[in-house]
Length: 68
Image 1 (cartoon, rainbow, N blue to C red):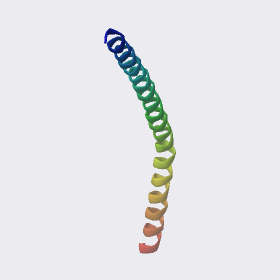
Image 2 (spheres, rainbow, N blue to C red):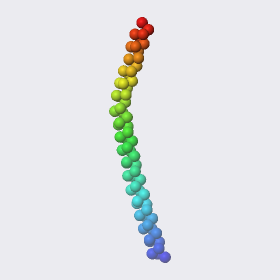
Image 3 (tube, one colour):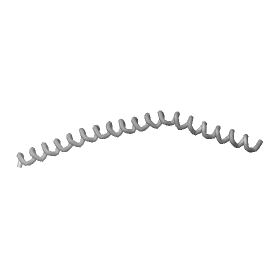
Image 4 (cartoon, rainbow, N blue to C red):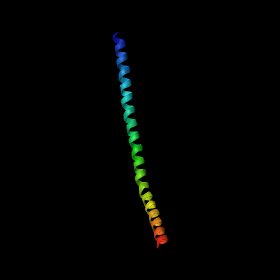
C-alpha cells in the first residue's frame, strides 16, 4: 500500500511540474507575439496616417479647384 501511494505521489508531482513549465513558456510566447504585432502596428500607422492625410489633401485641392 505504501509503495502505491509513493508512486501516485511521484506521478502527481511530475504532472504538476510539467503543467507549470508549459504554462510559463506559452505565456511568454504569447506575450512576444503580441509585442511583435503591436510594434508592427505602430510602425505601419505612421505610413498609413501620412497616406490618408495626403489623400484628403488631394481631394480637398480638387474640390477647391472644381468649385472655384
